[in-house]
Length: 200
Ligand SMILES: N[C@@H](CCC(=O)N[C@@H](CS)C(=O)NCC(=O)O)C(=O)O
Image (cartoon, helix red, strand yellow):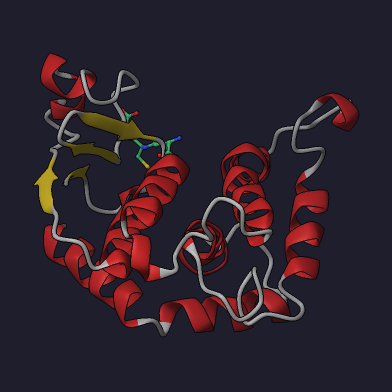
């Protein structure tokens, strides 16, 4: 597998995921300042011209949540994705899509100061609702699916780490802090952060 990435971007989620999976992969660092992510060769992998993106033979995958799901399915023995037929697969997919479909726009709403006049029409409702749902989901733990760490924790854990600890536009809450501590203690998370730091 070949990961196209750039330091200090959402690529950190894919790096963490690949480090959790333990599968061999090659890293291709793109210079965003030089516009390498807008060149035709990369646009053939991700037509949005954004990192991260992954190539695996003939397979091309972009969007962090899709990359996490894809890698988890490829690492069949890792336990990072409940298999098809396992009831936990439902909640696993729920949280992956929740990250992309609800957390991401809610973060933009908060960071950009958007006002949502009609929350019932917005897929994520409100920023506060998204945060409250996450808070409740993390009340028991240690992971979103209980004792089972999955790719969904890579996405939601990255979201909370970025929002609470890095960019700090998300309020600190006890359940968030405890969960982020568990995520950042994982050796794969720390390897990913070291790779990111070395790439800056
Ligand atoms: N929905 C994408 C977002 C990816 C994204 O926005 N990447 C940013 C860096 S964090 C990027 O490549 N920006 C460069 C650009 O758009 O020119 C995902 O979740 O992977």
